[in-house]
Amino acid sequence: MAAVFLVTLYEYSPLFYIAVVFTCFIVTTGLVLGWFGWDVPVILRNSEETQFNTRVFKKQMRQVKNPFGLEITNPSTASITTGITLTTDCLEDSLLTCYWGCSVQKLYEALQKHFYCFRISTPRALEDALYSEYLYQEQYFIKKDSKEEIYCQLPRDTKIEDFGTVPRSRYPLVALLTLADEEDREIYDIISMVSVIHIPDKTYKLSCRILYQYLLLAQGQFHDLKQLFMSANNNSTPSSNSSPEEKSRERSLLEKAGLSESEAEPPEENIKDCVVCQNGTVNWVLLPCRHACLCDGCVRYFQQCPMCRQFVQESFTLCSQKEPEKDKLKAL
Image 1: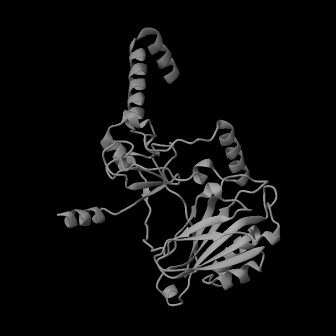
Image 2 (image 1 turned 30 degrees about the vertical axis):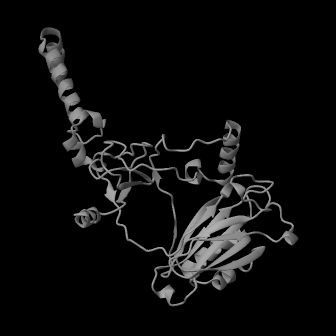
């Protein structure tokens, strides 16, 4: 009966066309305004509704003081044959121990032992965990709050010019920073820092850089330090003199090593303006892309990173809102 009624309505009445058009209008309006809970382009919604539906989890951060600092001085001049210069900046008296030709497998087994077995708070503890799987070791005493330049080099009698082709079984250099005074190890949560450093040689000519840095905690955890990416000021960024062929060759070397170009590139000079409003101070880091590009006012409107368009899973602030208020009070 219903079919007969619809056929009759279709043949003799214009109400059928009116009903179809009206139904399509209602469904389209509901989709655009989000009545059915389906996602639609943000440009079709107002700011209040976007702010209400955005669900980005704020990651709880814990402030920890890191007593260690290490960077490479003049990385362009470093090589296996000529050595490398490291600059340290430590809050307490520390020991810098360099392991040349450290086994990749034994190093990561040592990090697991720090978590499950014993704490790597001294150079001796790391040597026991590595089972002496390295080619040469040298150690330096670092004074408190002194930015010392330490020159490290393999002895000439080792006659080592490269560590083979990629993938390699040994890292060129692993630098361990530990606290020299046993009493200081009870003050800081971070008791040591392991830095994996690549140094160019005849076989693998990728420029010198720190590949990984691990912070080892007294509780047994270890954390991999990651670089934050901020929007670069094109006017202040120094231009590169390398040719396109050199850039393409270095990019291929990075891919062989399993490193993305953005992670391995040295940080550029940064600006503090929000990439959206160009007015507020950048204060939010988006995860997992690690772009620091939004201010407190703009972060609530974005489910995707405005720089790389990756969906934001978590975010955290560089400084709490209370800290700027304290700075303003001090200025007054």
